[in-house]
Length: 150
Image (cartoon, rainbow, N blue to C red; front, side, top):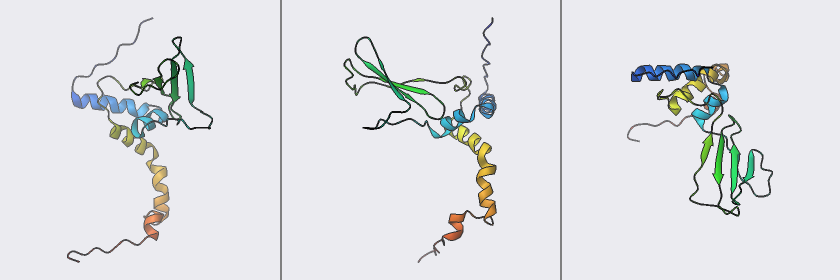
């Protein structure tokens, strides 16, 4: 079985278009996280740690694995032996299938947010249209009258 070859795009404008085409077909959860950041579970004293697990290592270190509640990306942190927190430890990440953009596509967070907005704007703006073209908060709160020199 042959492994599919990656398509390499040379022209910067073409790279961006190639990336935007990929983004337009990416899973909602991936586009949300790429645009607005991951939904990491938090360590909290006395709380059940949903989305967090501890994996013991042979040397006594513990790998703490945090799973994004949106896209399932995993963020890992390894303690010192004995489970001692290591302030110099760095996170490592494992991404789900389909998370990685095409190599060289030059996508950024704004591109991903534009795609989320494209997917949600009709539903999001429906409420605005129902209030005579103004969001409810703007319709009910008077704006200050600023005058030059006053």
